[in-house]
Amino acid sequence: MSKEMAEAFRILEEDKGIKKDDIVDAVIESLRAAYRRRYGQADSALIEFNEKKADFHVYTVREVVDEVFDSRLEISLKDALAINAAYELGDKIKFEESPTEFGRVAAQSAKQTIMEKMRKQTRLITYNTYKEHENELMSGTVERFDARFIYINLGSIEAQMSRKDQIPGEVFASHDRIEVYVEKVEDDPRGVNVFVSRSHPQMIKRLMEQEIPEVYDGTVEIMAVSREAGDRTKVAVRSHNPDVDAIGTIVGRGGSNIKKITSKFHPARYDAKLEKWIPTEENIDVIEWVSDPAEFIYNAIAPAEVDQVIFDEKDSKRALVVVPDDKLSLAIGRRGQNVRLAAHLTGFRIDIKSASEFEVMEAAQALAAEVALEEEVVPSAVEEVLPEVEELLDEAAPVENLEEEQE
Image (cartoon, rainbow, N blue to C red):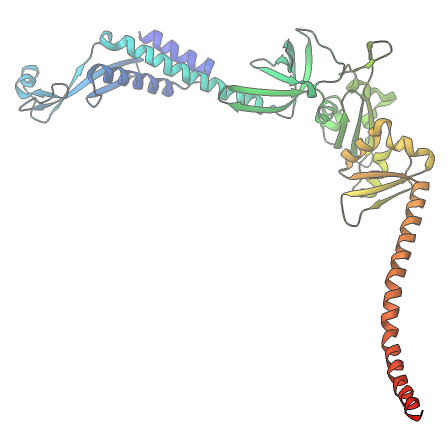
């Protein structure tokens, strides 16, 4: 039995990560429980583990007494002396129990306890393993699909990718190898859940770290990413080396670095006229990050030109961007995409107006201010002269009275 037990300990410790001490404790508790079921109590039980032989022994400990009240806990002095003449009152004697009497029950209980420990330990190992990869890229194999998720085998767990985390029009088949961004790892009573994404903005950042050496070593830093997956992305970058051009480094010669990134995705858009999906490519705009908010917004609105940026005095995270009349639609973008991406990238709520609209707005504000001023001035002017008028009226009254008297 010792060889089999030792081998079981080794397998559980090496393969499942369960420490031998935890297994020994589980077996001892199971043997104690089996003893309790057989004898109605476990106070007299002594369970020992022989480290050298990797074996367990169960004993009943009885105290030597004059008169026995509970044979489960006590033994008479007469019976004790029959075993060994050296025994005295108060001595404790160990009697080994036959494992066959309750070994099967104990073994089953121990197995259940160990299996539960194995499940918990396996879950903990799985959780810790994938938690370390949270916010990183991993490769996996597409396993199956349902109405809510694509399930991807990452090695020792099946990750879930929801619809919102998928690229529009991207299609996979079972056993396809794909790269995903590990967005979140959760542990709950039912097991470990790993949620992955291909649409997350940070996937672009991780791919750039992976594909561009200057990003990987920190020479060029990705400061912010704003993305509408499968369509368009804006990336703000800066260089920590004055001799290295941040934008040029990210784009690469002839756009080679950008092509490396976009080739990882296979978006498509549905053409209602043709009634089929048309393959497309995600466009990536690279802009320079600067600490000055106004200049950063200027850059983020590109490719449109900007005349001026005006910050809201009441709301520090709101800005009005004025662009030339002929650049308004370019600044806003298709279905508002350009300004939306710029807002997400900079962290400002951005309102776009053409130069003409801004002139009209300024004129309207000036007129409103003038009207308001007039409304304030007229009543105040009346209030200022009213005392003088009242004084004149008071002075005039006696004269009228005098004239009346003379008549």
